[in-house]
Image (cartoon, rainbow, N blue to C red; front, side, top):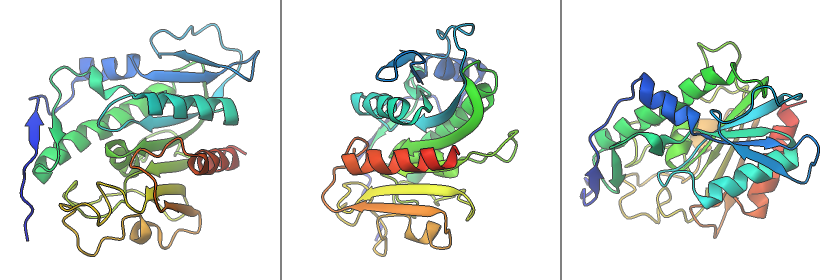
Length: 261
């Protein structure tokens, strides 16, 4: 039975141009390990980062925020990764696009897909820009949470100089449901992948009355079932925003440290 579309769509911009992509990248939240003081990090943006100030280059996690933008939780997670693993983290700021389409769920799948298309373009643009940065060490991974998890799962590095080392997908199940026309994930079986989900996720588990998939598992079971390099972490009572739970920190740090070797 079709779900009732009781949500709301705002904003009219459904495609990026060079100027909007530049703003998304220039204003990204960038966290770098501190070369002199490992207990601290450097927080800046790609536009403000001093290109002559870095003697070290870092593996980099390119992370797509959720529909609420670069929240306190995103910042805390990025700081943890930089401090604990020695990876840089860069979070393109999708909210820099004036009048960009946004939504309150549930809305039509075509509206979600318009957002997903913009988020995917942002990640690909950011990946290309990485190779121009003085702090980038030539190794990268891709991650995302919720709406950003869709972009991370769909990220395709085919046309880039090198492939990502791993994907970290938080609070997105990589399944068919109300949020996508189809999953369209790009998750090769030889790629290290981490999928972290709450078993009671308010959007992507069967706890959601408008999930629109009665057979959903609520995590990336089908997408990753043939991947010996994948890990799935299921948290029975976790909230949708679960980035900073101790179990999630540990799993994220482990996969990044492993693929950086």
